[in-house]
Image 1 (cartoon, rainbow, N blue to C red):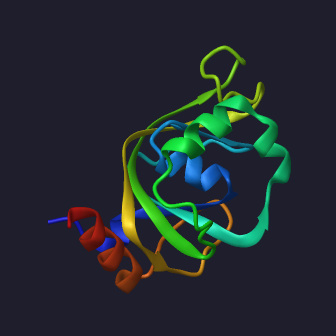
Image 2: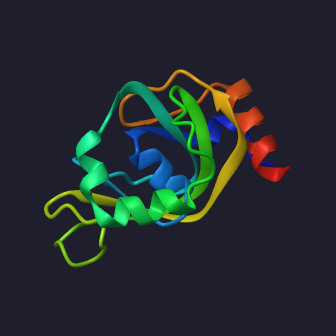
Image 3: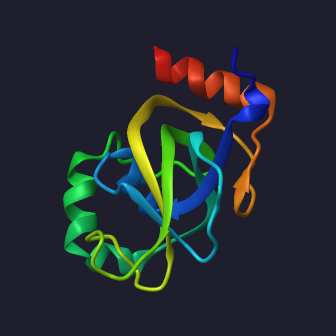
Length: 140
C-alpha cells in the first residue's frame, strides 16, 4: 500500500498551473533536477500570475481546454505522475525553456474540486490530509 508520505507536490503560478491541468503542458521547466519519480500533486501558488504567458499561443490553446477558468490560487488542481527529468536542449517540447530541467508529467488528471493547500518551493511532501483529499477527488 502506498502511504501519503510517498506522494510529492510542486507549486506553479498561473496560468502555467492551468496549462498543466489541461493536459497540454506535459513538462514543467525548473532550475534544478529531481530524482523523484512517481505520483505528484499540481498546486497553484498563492503568489502572482504570469501575465506575459498570455502572449504565448501554446498557453492560449491550453487554456481553451483548461477545466474551469477560475484561476485557483493556493489549491491542488491536478494529479499526475512525474516520469522523467532531463536537461532541455530547446527542441524537446513546445513548452521548452532551453537550459532548464524538464520534469516530465504523464497522466495528468484535473480535479473538479480543487483542494486548499499551503505550497512550498521545489518538490515538497504534502500533509496527509491534503494528499488524501486530492487523490480521493482524482479518483471520483
